[in-house]
Image (cartoon, rainbow over all chains, first blue to last red; front, side):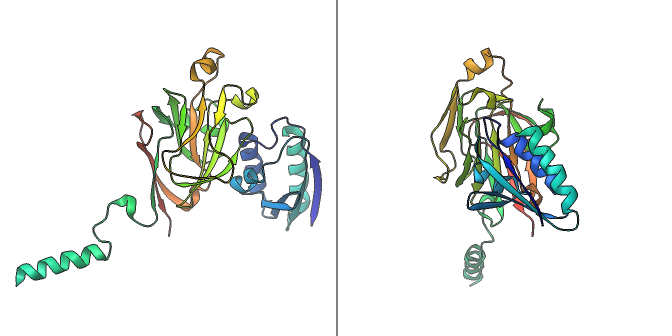
Length: 85
Length: 178
């Protein structure tokens, strides 16, 4: 498993439009991707699951990737977080 | 005698669910328009992320008014603090996103009000949000409002082909894939 943490700096948190793009990005990989906020986790490949976490600005999320392409997926997703949130 | 048989087969047919409107069929859900306005194809939305169906397939509505009603019975899964978008999980299992206007997130809630909160059970036609349409238009916002199903791959979707709608008019019919 490969994982990283990210502190959300977008004032609107993980909001709908970029969240959709993030989900699309995660779907490109065969690995399972899990987003965790506090004690709640969500499948990062499902928009509703991600939106349901209600991630706000200033919060730290954890992204865990597990599967054959986990290294590349984690790298791509971390970059996406940095550029969009 | 034949008359009696006819009655009984009619009765049995009804009991089996043979004579029902599509709206009551299991696996079929009709989504009502959340807004009064004009339906356009999702492909015509200026925001490419929606036009390319990244967040899901559906339609968009150019609002004639500023009241957003629930398209179906369901639960408010997510409501952004900026009150410009709401996610409804319908009782039929559709994951519905209503996103009022383009880049309206930047207003941080200005001109928007919410009448529900996350976790609320809502009925079809219940008021979810309001927005000050005139004020937003005056500030130059494109108010085309996508209504998309983010788990559309689980359904066969029939979409309204356009034209004027009132709140509650069917804009999308979903049939659960078996």
